[in-house]
Image (tube, rainbow, N blue to C red):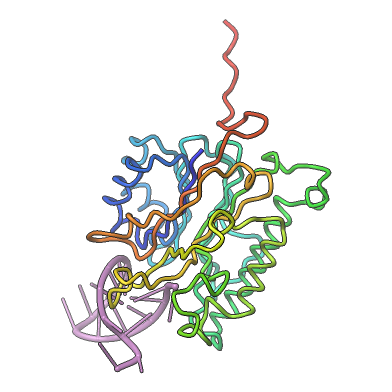
Length: 289
DNA sequence: ATGCCTGAAGGGTTCAGA
C-alpha cells in the first residue's frame, strides 16, 4: 500500500498538478493539507475527477485558509473531523481529519504555523499539538495498547501524516544558524513532537535515511528550491507495527519543480503486506444465492 | 530589502504562510 502526504497550498490551484501526480505516482492513500476549500467547494471542484481516478474522498475544510482531506482507493471508513478538545484561534480551525483505509488508521493534520515564538499563535500551536497528542492517546492508543496487551481498532496499524510545521532536528533545516529564535526549531516545539513520538510513533523517512539532507518545503522566494535551501517539516509518523512494514520512504522533489508548484513536496511511503495479510478494505461476503 | 513568492478575499490592498 502506498500512502502519501502533500501540502498542496490550495487544492483549487493545484488541481491539474494533483491529477497528473496521482496518475504518475499511483498512491493508494493521500493526505492533503492547505486545501483552502470548504467541503462543498472541494466536492464540486475535485469530486468528479477524483472519483474517476478511483478515489473516495473525506474533506474537512473552510473557505479561506487551512483545510485537510484524505483520498483513498483502498476503503475510507470511520471518518473523524477535527480533534477532541481542540483549541481555537479564536475559533476551531479545519486542521485534522482521520479515517481507516486499507486496514490502517490514517490521521492527516495541518499543524498551526506558530508565526513567532513570542506570539499568541505560537502558544496556540503548542496547545494544538498537546490536543493532538491527547486525541491520539484517547482514540487510538488506549493504555492496553501502550502496554502491548491489546491492539486498537486497526490492528495497531496507525499512521499520522501531515504538515507538522516542526523541523525535528537541526539537520532538517538548511542552516540552523539562520533559524535561531524562529519557529519550527524551538525547544518547546521539538518537545511537543517528542511527546507525539513517545506514543510509540516512528519518523519513518528519517529512520530510513538517518543522515541524508532531506527537505519537504522550500520558500517560493529567492530561488530557495533551486539552491536547495529548505526544511523538513512534512512528516509521516507510523506506529510500531506499521513502521515495520515500511519498504520505501522518500520525498518526491520532482513535484516541486516546474511551473505552478506547491511550496511543499509530497512524502511517499510504501507499506509491505501486513503480517496477517490484511492490506485491503473489508469486502462484504458474497450474498447467498 | 528584512514578506524577495503565492494564494485568497474582496476591492484597487491586506493577510497569511514558515
